[in-house]
Amino acid sequence: MSDASPLVFPTDYPIKVVGRREPSLRPRVDAVLRRHAPDLTEDRIRERESGQGNFVSVTYTIVARSREQVIALVEELAATEGVVMVI
Image (cartoon, rainbow, N blue to C red; front, top):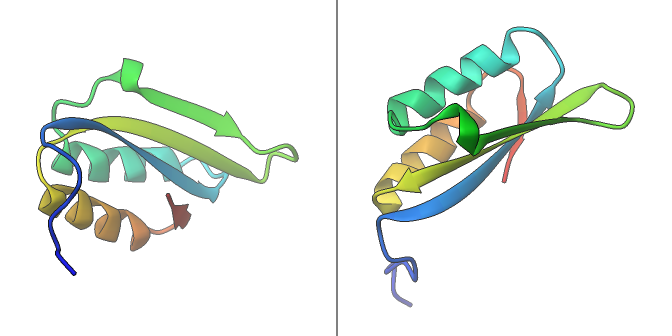
C-alpha cells in the first residue's frame, strides 16, 4: 500500500474542529491554524453552534500545500485544550 496522497497540492482542504463552547476556544484554535496556514482569511472560516449550545464547530478551508502540513496541523489541533474532535 502506498503512502502517496490522492490529493494534488496545493488544494483547498476543509478541516472541521469541534469543541466545548467557551470564550477561549476559538482564539486557541485560530492560533494553531494561523501557524500552519498563515494565508488563511476570515471568509474561509465558518462557525456553527450545536443545537443546545454546548458545543461549537468551526470549519476552516485552508490552502493545503502538502500532506505533511495537513498531518502536522491535525495533530496539533487534536492536542489543543478544549478540542473534542477534528474532522
